[in-house]
Structure formats: C-alpha cells, structure tokens
Length: 386
Image (cartoon, rainbow, N blue to C red; front, side, top):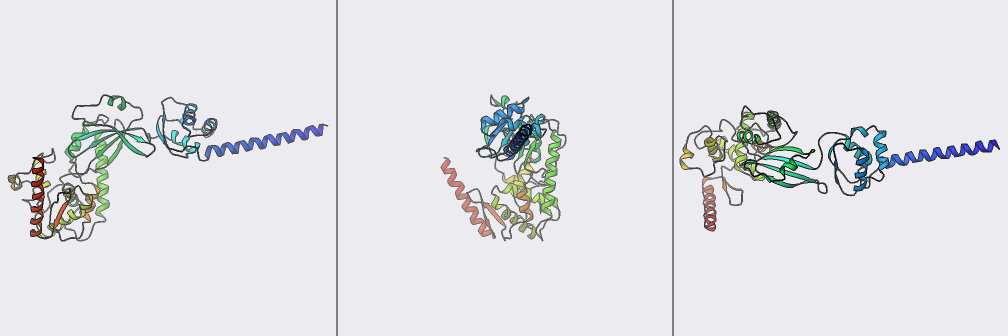
C-alpha cells in the first residue's frame, strides 16, 4: 500500500512539476511574444506611477494580454524600480518585454507634446505640436510669434507639461544676427550670447534640446554641425572649380541659398555663378547688395534703389570682382552641395519666371527677352491688384 501511495505521490509531483514548467514556458512566451496591440498608442506614465498602474493602463488600451505576467516579467528582469515618467510611443504588436524596456530605458519622451522654436527668415515662431501615434507625424496645436506679444491663453498650461520636449529649428538662409536675436526669446534656454557667430557658420537644421540648455552651447553645436557638413562636402567637390578654400565655398553657397527657394534649381543657379567666376564676370546678385546695406540685421523690406546698386560695400557684387569677403547668410547642406557640385551649363544669366523659379540664359540677348517677359508678368499682376 505504501508503495502505491509513494508511487501516486511521485506521479502527482511530476504532473505538478510539468504543469509548473509548462506554465513558466507559457508565461515566458506571453511576455516575449508579439502583443495584441493593433494601433500605435502614446502611453503617458505619470510621475510616481507604479508597474501595477502602468499594467492597468496597458490592459485598458489593449496593449497587453495579461497584467500579472507584465508585472512579474518586469520584476523578474529587475526593472520594476526603473520606471520613468513621460510619454512613450508603443508600436502595434509590441511585446510586454519591449514595452517594459520602453518605459524603463530612460531618455526623452518619444511622443506627446513638443515645443519647436523655429527661427525663420523674417521672424521666429513658437510651434506646439503633438505626435499622432497613428501616423507618427506631429500635428500643430498652436503657433505664435513670441515677439508679437500675443501669447495664447492655454500656452502656459501646455508649456508646464512635465514631459514636454524642446526643439530649435533654423530655416535655411537665416543670418547669424537673426539667430542670436531670436534665441533671446526662447524662454527654455539659459545664458547670454556675448559674441556674434561668423556668418555662415551655423547649420540650418533641427536641434533637440533640453530645458535650461545654455544658448552658447547650442550655438557651438550649430557651428560644429556646419563645420562637419562643409568638411564632408568639400572632400567630394567637383574638379576645376574657381573656388580655392572651404570658406569661399560657404560664401558661394550662401548666395545660392538666397537666390532661389526651389530645390531643383540650386545646381543651375550655382552653375551661373561658377561660370561667371571662371570668365571674370561680376556676379551682380541682389542678395549681396542687400547684405551690404543691412549686414544681415533685418530684412530690407523694400526694393533695391538704383543708387544702392552702385553703392560700394564689401558685399556689393555689382561693384566688386569675385566673391564677397564673407557669406551673406547661413546656407543649408543642399546649397553647399550645389556650390561644390554645380550643373555643367553655359548659363550666365537668370531672372524670375513668374512661377517661383527662374528662366536661365546663355547670352545677354536671351536674358533680355526673359527680363522683358518677367516685366510683363509684373505689370499684369499690378493691374490685377488695382
């Protein structure tokens, strides 16, 4: 009888052991396997939250199949105490293991609200944007000019969000003076900017920053990024260019940047200036005249007078030969690349064509025809306004 009891006990133990082992294997597969989430979500983890609270949120969102397994998995991997507050993007099919990693990894939030301080050619703009999990694209919530004094009523509330992320974006063609002046209005940055960065030395780009970052550190990052871009593109420049140094390339790129807003035209515009430099023809480009008048400290806000076309400044390419002594703006990567790898053309002239682009010409006669056509377009537009 005792043998029978012992045998039955052993059998029961084995069954329980197998069941436990099977349960562990099942639980592990539940934890590491693809989750049930069908659409991306933005998971908000409040300060002071626990894994229990997060597991309930995930369960309500349909992101996990078992809250207990989620909590036990986080505890077993010793990540329960590493939970971070913030807003985190959870992709469809994310496993419990992947979600635990997302909410404990640290770093900035990956979704939620972002404040983008955009420095444009004319003015700066504060843009509050929220990530749409379904499209992974930001949707603008509000936008305003901080210098205008009209701040939306709910800006302060959104600005106080604990997981708000910050970004500074420079438009292509802004001047260094504009950047320094506009950064003063960025209330999430600290410190003063004592020196004006050399014109052209700042990379137009988007910079993710942290609240309280020093302004001079951000400017240094902009300069470092532009230096690397220039170094990279200079090493891959075309042969035979009438440009002797990377600094001259930056000057030419800044002129290309200010002459066209059409990306497809940059290499053609660059070819015109390269051809003129090769033939010893003055560049005769209006943006250099404007920079000579303003030195990049404000938009001119009107047309150029004939007397100003003849005024001698270091940047007036109607008066000086060759390139100006400095860039006239901060060119983007595409304009630097165009200046160093222009199209192979015989163009020497270009003028606006009425569509936002330009009409190019090889001879003065062709150019004069294009100019006459443009003046007719201008006259028709003036008549339409009246």
